[in-house]
Image (cartoon, rainbow, N blue to C red; front, top):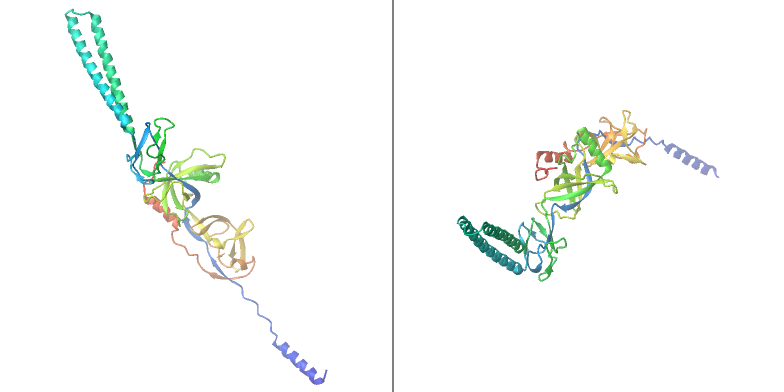
Length: 401
């Protein structure tokens, strides 16, 4: 290497060395922190229910005969006592006429027997006939009167059979289709009577749901402590939503709890009653049911995304007075109006990291950015309970338990 070239290399090395600078340390990461919300809340437990009619009637024939006419449109709403079917009434009208004639005949017999008995009394007084003859005529009168009563009963029965040829709706509700067409022979008056159609009531409507054993025990304990009355004694509030509905727009109250748990499923059946003035709710539909699950109490709440999971452990990251990250295991409760109840692990003064949890490590120093958790002064779930307590939450008076 020539001396000139060697000097050039040395100069370049010196320049490069002079340009090297030590990189400054990176600043602590900025972390949004907030103290937990403290709110009065109430819990609502959610179940899957199925709608059923409060009344279901199989409309059957009560007399035999040929179906003469149908007086409803398939699937329409019918009122009580609305005419549905007519069975050919002519044979029964003939029976009524015959029974009426028999009553008239027996009336004539009674009048004759009464006249003969009176005449016999006068003759006995004059000793014209024997006492035995008087007794015979008196017995004849009693026999005629009994025959008249039997004839009147037969007339009443015939009139009932004639009345039963007109089959009327026993309840208000939606009728099904006609199961038997005009001209067919139907059987009536027995356990095997022909089913002509069915009617289901729609307003109000029941929703049945199954409560698991753990929840049933919880409700019993809450009632024992006086925090929430049992649904056996009090019509606790219920909300319901169909599969395509947002929120829980249908409001009602409990009106039945079964007397035992089903040993095959470990559940107990409950039932609520809901008003259905627009007839949107139809028997057989599934619904999501929310039942009042606790009394009122004050709780600490955090956004659900502020809670991390480490295998089976739930935890939060708290920033202490030295701006160091501290890992705190917690006991989470239910989700209430988008916020997670924290039963144990944090207190109201803790600064909990609510964003950027992936970058946090226990013991790391961070730059906290103080913020607050946005929430209304009264959570919607508690506001709903106040509506029920005010008497307008279900659209109807509470039914008797």
